[in-house]
Image (tube, rainbow, N blue to C red):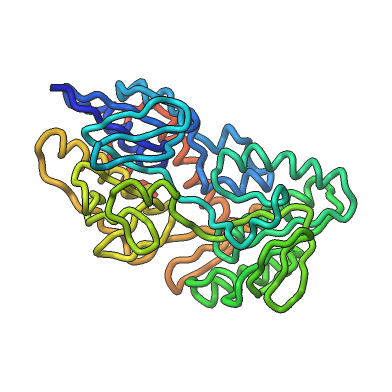
Length: 381
């Protein structure tokens, strides 16, 4: 009997699954990849693209060659709901799709609940496809107006990198404008070592960013801070943390208290053993994992192995996240700060290190899909 494996989302982990299928595809397996775009944009290179260091083509993987090599079908659509009890998924435009085995790698949404009053002035970082389409319009508007004011909300890595990248883009384009970064009272990069926070803050001050350490809400004129100060804005970019997709609430999958899919050490749903989930859409029952693309990249080969094990009747392999992850934080110009636990360093050479890793990721999944094994990919930075 033919079994149907449905992969929802073209994220980092599913790239590894497609490459594994291209090397060894079980007989009698119908594979469908459902994702909104034929391109998978790489989030790690988004700040570099905004800053002007890359073209969009350099920051994305074309899914077509991977899908064809895997013997799969590509359906361009977006998930809007699912029923785990009935083993089916609903989509925005096409009919529902039934599955025997399902893997979800759809990421998360940007939590903009405090900023909705901004209306058309608000641009969340996610979904990436929308951001890539919108940023050139913002830059053009900034070049056409005197004293243009851009505000980035979010003091984590995504917000800091985006604010510094936007400042670099304004400088390169000769924009008469200003970039402000609104973080919470916790300051920049909460969770990173004090030395990392100090390095990045010094660089942000030198770059000319306006820094505000208070929570903010959206208003018609900009971002209103908790201390009553208004940060005026022509445009606000939200990098304000993650929230799960609304449709998960009706999926009948077991969820945690925040609404993310609960998975075990194999990244298998605790409520439905034929459903796997990786990346920002899930939460482990046995470990606390940061919502970082690092885990999706490294979990990908393990996910591929486990999906094949389910099909072939083999043993599952756990994904063991590393105790600490390496972060290479782009600072707008070709300069970066490295953060690994309590250790940190900075310089142009760190940016070249990051550039080598990022472009290497794109090259690996743009090359011959049969040229590397999942184990080779897992051991690559």
